[in-house]
Each structure stands twice: as C-alpha cells, then as structure tokens.
Amino acid sequence: MSFAATVLTLYPEMFPGPLGHSLAGRALEDGRWTIDTVQIRDFASDRHRTVDDTPAGGGAGMVLKADVLGAAIDHAMQRQPDAPVLAMTPRGQPITQKRIRSLVQGPGVTLLCGRFEGFDERIFEARPVEEVSLADIVLSGGEMAALSILDACIRLLPGVMGAASSGVEESFEEGLLEHPQYTRPVEWEGRTIPEVLRSGDHAKIAGWRKAMSEDHTRLRRPDLWERHGGVRARPASGVRHEDKEADQ
Image 1 (cartoon, rainbow, N blue to C red):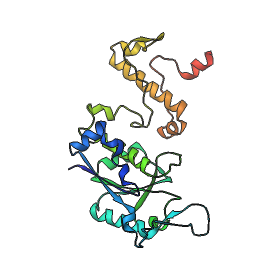
Image 2: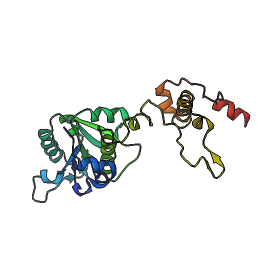
Image 3: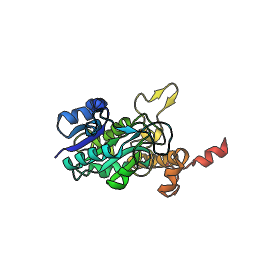
Image 4: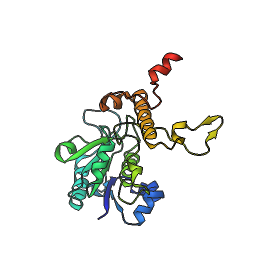
C-alpha cells in the first residue's frame, strides 16, 4: 500500500514540483507514494468563488474563510479518513523528525496550505487539524512547507533510499546533529580527512562520530542539546572543546 498525500491549496500546479524528480520522483513513478491536489477555491459557494475576506476587528490583509476551508477539509477527510490533517502555519508546532517518522508509519497525510493572513480560527475548533510550522520563518504560502514535509516523509518510505542506514545516521534521528562527513581526496587545499576515519578501527570511528555529533549539537543547537539531556561525552581524541578553547 502506497503513502497517499492530499494537498489542499489554491495553487495545485505547484505539485508535485520538485518531488517529481530524483528519489521522490522515481518513488512516485514506482507507486510508492501518490499525490492528489485539491483546489480550495472549488468549495466556495458564491459565483466569484471567494475564498477570503477581511479580518474581523479590522487589520491588514485577508483571511481564508472558515466555511470554504471546512468544506475542503471535509472532502479530504472523506477520501482519507485515517490520514491526519496538518495545516501549514508559522504559529504551529515546529515539525520534527520524530513526527515525520510517525506520519510515515500511517497511510498518508493531508496538508492544508494557507495564504494571505492565515486561517479563520474556527476551523481548528471545528475540525481535527494539527497546526505545524517548518521553522521560525514566514513564507508567502504553505505550499513550500508542504513540499518540504512531503520530501521528509517520502525519503523514509521503504525502498526509496538506497541504503537502509541512510535514514538513521543523520541529524535529529538520535536527538543530535549529524557528525561531519568527508570523502576523497584525502587532502584538499592543505586540509586532510581526520586520521581516525582512515584508521579502519570501527569502534574508534563510531566513538569519534558520536563525540562530534554531541559537540556540534551543544555548540550549534543548545536547544536540542538540552532536550537530549546535556550529558557531555569525551571525544575519541580525549580532548574536549572546552580544553581546545582554553588553549587558544
């Protein structure tokens, strides 16, 4: 059974977009996942097919109407009753790799893409819609965020990535950022691949990679490091970053 994606959008022509190429594109051709776009405007009831209106209480911009959105969501839920509905909005909970993995375990997902000043709040009260965000940024619409979330899901589907370990040894899978990666040539512009990676000692390599993941997470993403537990392991080299900084 393939992973079924439904996208509610005012711009269905944006899909599959980049997901029609590379790994995701091949997986789409192979039937490992499917995508169905739903034009939100089709659920407007007036002759002008109006999907938005001015904000109650005044203010700039326009807001997507609850009656139109509700009808579009109901349509998607009838087609995929077991798929969660995610609304793309900057105020939503940041999407995580853990949430992506949970989505992949299910039959698919319905993604609601906003525009203008966002959604009428009542849809979140009346429908089981989960508000998610891609990052602490504001986009012109939810389509780009939806594409990113779908890409994150598709690459984890069975048979999409070549190596089974590709989806495991990477950032966020263990609550840490990924360790640095190197490849040939051994020397480039006077910089060499760390000796431990050329040693052939798999235990030492694993220890170095774990230590580097911890170092990078602690220094670059203290929020992740704190959630991880903040337990500092000594690198395989035996030299901590604090020791290096003290020597400089």
